[in-house]
Image (tube, rainbow, N blue to C red; front, top):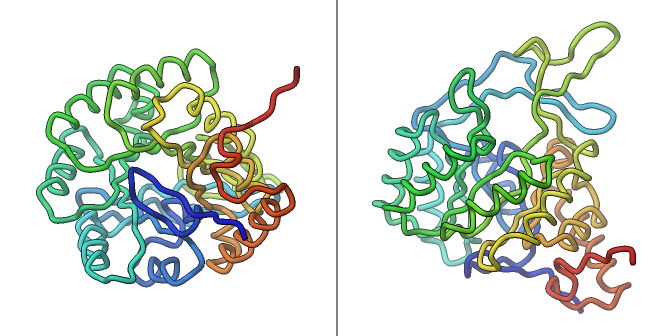
Length: 311
């Protein structure tokens, strides 16, 4: 027998698979589909201070190698998701969960996190640092000075388990710089990666999504090599107390296996979940277990982070 169970910040999960924020998580009904599936956990839609309708449609399009989207953070407001996970916590059979949040400004971020700190919610929270901050500015996590300042302010009052969702980094020096900042704080985890920003997909002579003249985040097969690189780069650089969630290009047990091999403690599924539905967790879990059996691995710790290099 093999075990795919795992832990993040002391929270136990029966297996390492879950949805990526934004997929099958807008409503309580969608979240319950993930809860009742073979997923080890779910993460909520990234909630903002107030509900948002998001960008005009079409804002998501499947492609031959993945997807492109420019959703514009549609969500029902962080209170909706906070109330839902608080209610689930009261049920003995409930899994452990992740609450995803983001502020549209640093002030909003602090308002949200201070309210969660004051609440009775004891679960994991993911702060999305891979959303644009203000027009003309890069994503927060690409602005290292702002990232350090906001984390410093947050941890002056926030004492519950907190992780951050990251955009992809592409330069070794950026891995070094980002990790040196993250290691200063009691983060529970980092999630690598959000979609690769501002791709462009064309059908005949026309873009396939409406917002931003067709520019959008790329997910799916396209991004797995970048995701694996980010997972492993941070596994090499972060304090062992900061765990890693791997996200990007996962549609098979082999993909999940590679994320764990690179250092991930849990693996999120996005584009493939959108296309296949929650039954995907059962299939990928079975494929992952078969790989582990074939290789003689009994637990994720037998191979997590143990990527081989060429001599």
